[in-house]
Image (cartoon, rainbow, N blue to C red; front, side, top):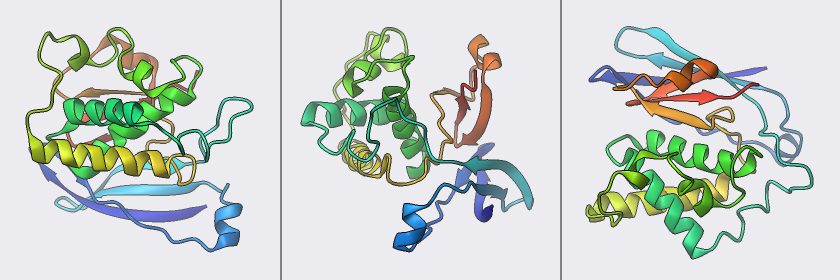
Length: 199
């Protein structure tokens, strides 16, 4: 098992994490099935914040993970960007990427719809979709960032290791939903805590 250390800092009790880039040879990429342990380190107090073991994401039977989102349409990308924008526009780039990965992990999970827009708009799953407010992005810079991240996550999905370890749930640190007790916590990024359903 390889180990990667990622240094971060703390701001407003939120962990800020910098992404590490790992370059693989063609053979390594083809045979990249060995787990990689990612260690998130709080640089301020020099302690390990979280340890996450990354493994390849299992897919639904008969699906090619590299091709699933390869031809994602404009509507799909728009829905994904909306979810990233409304759920995490105040977060770091990593925090926004994690929201994107969770959304796509749901598409891959048989417990959720199999299309991006249907996952995003599934009843009462993401708070912004039923808060009675406008669903039109108003912050142009944040919207441009969300769109860029949406495209990057779609292009990486099934090709790169999932940094969320297959997480399909998250919530803000300001709330304590009862459902969180049923799942395994993966990591806290900024003001969100991410969970995976191992059941």
